[in-house]
Image (cartoon, rainbow, N blue to C red; front, side):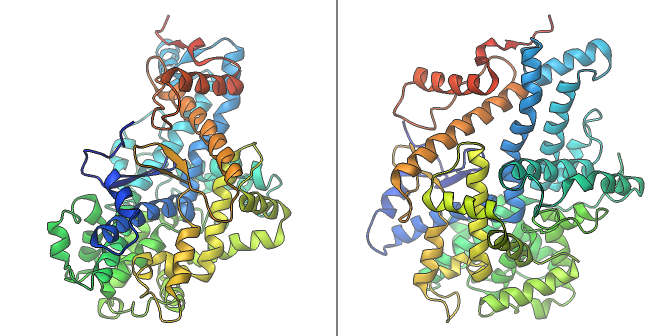
Length: 528
């Protein structure tokens, strides 16, 4: 199988649904060199860029909630889909089946179908808004399933936390008590809080996580390249290389515009350090998870990364001379001081407060100690393995973020040994290696698990296989809900070891173990 990136402009990618980093074969070959050649430095910068995406999706507070919402939706839909099967309502897709019911009756009178699609649309719309606030123009056109963004945010957080609770905290001893949320969200609706009223205007930003994630990854990459090459390249040089185009520079350009400052010529610059700090704070809201919600009426404003980004820039613009030179030594204390000042302005908890909450779980709760023991051995209980695996990794991130928040915020500079005089490069490298992505392709394109030095290889391979058994079943569930026509078994991206038929049978058998029928037993709905 050819690498998915060969013959394309992209040098690397991270797929949040498949949870895999892919690198161009040329990048793999350059990384295999045992030198510090320009080719290897550039290749490592690409690998670091994609690793940052893994950190964003599993290591940040917001990223973790949105990442587990994908399997969470499959879990909450599972009971309703099985009910439909038992009633012999074996139709695909659920969306088409609903359209038929609605066209015949004018009412969404199938309880299971309605619940499945309410979960699906609410979570989907919340994630679309978070990805890019301007998507509200499209979302608001759905007059059947979209009520308001407050409901969507409520559903995204509560569904993810509910499924998380099944694995680590069934009694809600330490997770946010989502059972208490419904009435408080209804009160926010009665008060007509921003984002809680149908067809009302609401605060939006010009961007979302799509631009923030890419900006954070790209400017860390370029800061690394700038320092590693002895400040050889300017901003214009990188632009000529095609590294500062489109989505990669969108957040940075808005950052400059909102604050009202000129673009710096050198990437090893305090302005770049400040931009990366703003990105880090924007994607790490604490309210809702891991802390409980403090103010329901302002929950959207306080938890949406695009809005947070814009508010932070607005505050900085009021004293831009101070702030554009604020990042100097890239130290832990500097990160704490600056993030606390910025979060005080937007009336939200600093990211490290969330990290501290999570790190305390292991000290106080047996379920978390058991989970981290599974992670240390890379041998997880099979129930909800995907959720348990990602949760363990998220907790590990927070444990290290408490100690080294500056490394995670400014990883590009950190990996050159210039993060701070009190922090050795060897320590930074250990942190980076400890938080590599779980899955990465090899030359040719096949996905392999990352074998960590302190993890047993046999356990790692077993976890890898079980994870993707869950992953493909989640994907088939989404296809059942949304995809027109027969199932497409497009899983050749996973391995080259088996034929298409063998892979198809593997997926079919896992589907039947979950839903008691083979996928082909679902009839493509034609309204008859």
